[in-house]
Image (cartoon, rainbow, N blue to C red):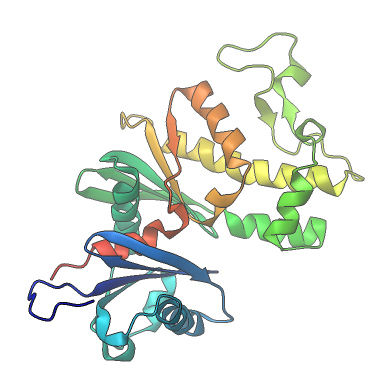
Length: 281
C-alpha cells in the first residue's frame, strides 16, 4: 500500500547490467534488493527491454512505481532514450562493479573480480574505485572451448560432466614432477594446466579441466594484481561464481597465498546492484 501523503516515498530504482552474453536486472527499494533476474536474448536491445518487461511483470510493479532506471555494461551504449519514458542514466561499468561488490560484501578495501564473458579487476579503496586491468579468460573461454572439445555450450551439461572428472588426468601437479613439496607449493598444487591431457581424454576429465583452468587462472591473476597493494580480500562477482567448483578452487588458493575470496549472496547481480546504487536524487 502506498501512502500518498508520505512525501518521502521513494520509487523503485532499477539497475540493469547489459553484459556481453546476459542481461542482469535488479530493483532497489529503500536500499533493499528486490528479486534480481537475468535473461539471455539474441541481441542486447531485445535483452534489455525484455529483462525490464519481465522484471516488472514478475514482480507486479507498475511503470509509475519506477523512479529511475540506471544502465551499465557494454550494451548500455546502444540505448540513448529514456526507457518507457522513465528517467534513465548510464553508469560506468567498473564503478558499478565496485559499488555493488562493496554493498554486497560489506568490504571497503578489496579487489573486485568480475567474472563474465571475460574478466576485469577493479580495485576499491573506500570511494576510490579504479579499473586496474583484465583478463581475456572468462565464461566465454569456457563456452568456446566446450563447444570445440565437448560439443556442448550448455553450462548445466558442462558442470555435470565435470562432476565426474578427475583433474589428475589433465593437469600436471607438483607431485608429478617432484618427490617433495616445493617451498610453499604442496604436492597437489598445479604445475601446468592441461599438460597431461591425452588425445582420447574422457569428456568428464576435459570438462573439469576447462573449468579448473578458467577459475584457477582468474584466481591466480587476481592475486598477482594485488601485489604491492596490501589488499588481501577479493570479491568474486559475475555468472562464473555459480560454478560449484569455485568452492574447491578458491579455498585452495586462499590456503596457498593467505588471502580471502568472497562470493556474496547476489554475486551475479552485483554490477546491476551497483548501477542502481549509483543513483543520486
